[in-house]
Structures are given as structure tokens and as C-alpha cells.
Amino acid sequence: MAVNRRIFTDQDFEEAIEKQARIRVFQDNHIVDSSSLVVRFDDRIVVTQSGVSDIAYHNRKECEFFELKKR
Image 1: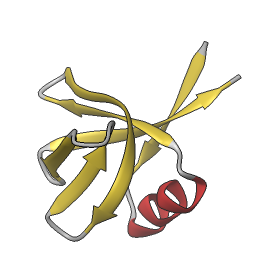
Image 2 (image 1 turned 180 degrees about the vertical axis):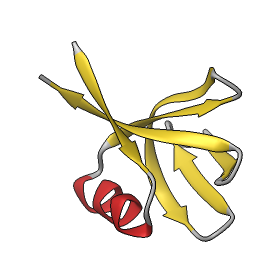
Image 3 (image 1 turned 120 degrees about the horizontal axis):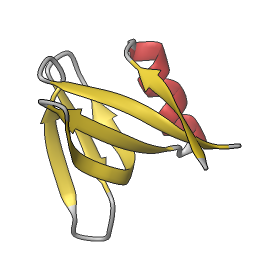
Image 4 (image 1 turned 90 degrees about the horizontal axis):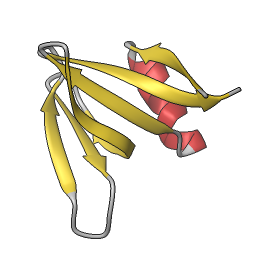
């Protein structure tokens, strides 16, 4: 079973990129992206990639990001 850790700060996103941690993205209490890697981020946008050509752009203010950790 996976444990979710909220990713909120720039440092959290940096760590997720370094560790190549899988994340889940929620928007309006719905999962909009699951088991993706953070490719890059800035103050407004977080870019995730779940496959070779599957890239998604998420508004940082409208979404919640969680790192997936296995127990």
C-alpha cells in the first residue's frame, strides 16, 4: 500500500525530481495524473511525464501534488 506525502514547496519539488519519485496530482478532489515523474516546475506550472510522449502541464495553484511512497 502506498503512503502519500504532500509536495508543496520548491524544495519538495526539487527532491521529487532528484529522487525520481512517482507523484499523484489532484484537481478539484479528482485524480488527474497518477504515477508520473516531475520533469520541471516554476511558480505557476508543474510539468509531469508518465511515458515517452505523455507529458502533462498542471497549474500549481489549482492542483495538489503528492509523492507516492511504498510502505
